[in-house]
Image 1: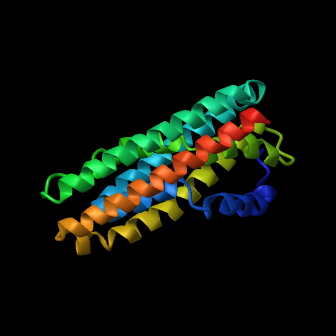
Image 2: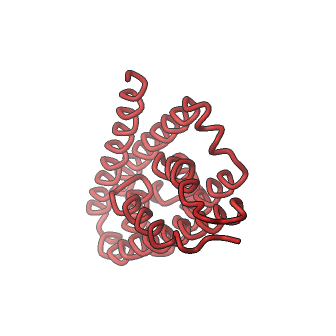
Length: 210
């Protein structure tokens, strides 16, 4: 059986992880503002899918592999940072094209990009592989317990970040008729991606030097 008594403490920890801005939140804000509520809804489903992959990985024991070979975790972090830089580049191109009323690159395939952003988000990796196993409690079936915890975490992030993305999408119509305003949003989103990527790279570099 699963131990539900750990849920209050687990939920509190989830909120501590989700509230600080990260790649997932930044991506949802950018997609909501640039693509509207429909794009935000697709993006959060992608992020939820990526999180579910990590939840399943923890259940089958992949977390132990990352603990045994921590360099693998650094590799995934760097890949995530590189993807954020690529997103920044694509967003800047979208800003330039939006002035000429061309299709916005930043909002293409929001579901697929959401999956990639989630899979390469260091916060998600660390949480599922390091935190979930700490809340086994008195569960007699660890796999069932981890599956329950993973489902709770995925559900909370989908609801929280989905609300943020859809809320940002409300303002999309105010900018869609102004190419220059849309370009500004693209540049702001690109700046967020770059800062996050450089932060991740910096953290990995410091970890390798210590």
